[in-house]
Length: 91
Length: 147
Image 1 (tube, each protein chain N blue to C red):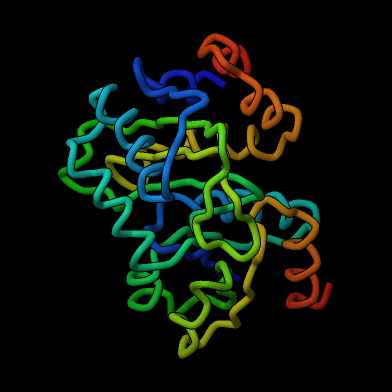
Image 2: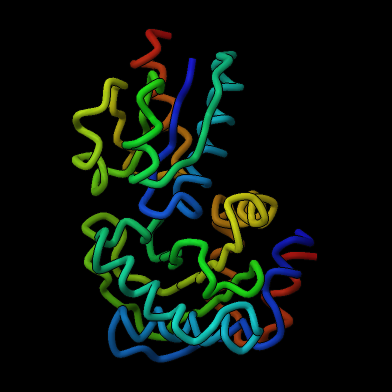
């Protein structure tokens, strides 16, 4: 499984989100590749991603991607990330 | 938190500042990166342009903004600056305004700041550290969080 964490520049929010997604995946005992990306490169290279996680402000940029979009309000809220990932993963 | 301590170069910690707008707050954080020779002066404008282009998503937690622009030739060396504001500023974030802490990140590429971001993430997850950041008037108080 592949998950991309997307923000505007690919170096700030997306990196923090990637780190927190990895923490949650460990808790859920799910193995997945997580990459941080900026919006432009996500649109270009992100077609193989199963799940696209980003902030609500940026979600509309990625609407036509094949992966499922999961907006995250608070990238430091591990509870939110866990709830949303669990629901998408059916765990 | 050695990476944070190194990333915050001399002149990059500006405490109890007054900003008149979010642009001013970002410029202050940019001036910290400029003083510590991590970026060229144009980097501040690039950070402001990023918020104008993509919206205030860089306000990532209640009261905390993480300003940055893309890795480019404006970045001399990967680094960080910290500004605390005596009066909170509106960035236009529905969820997390108003802002009292602004970090500015300069990343030379997509890898060199990963250690720094891991430590920043730990810091920002810790409410006690945030309280100390906001109440610090001396740089040494901030640095003591990283030791």
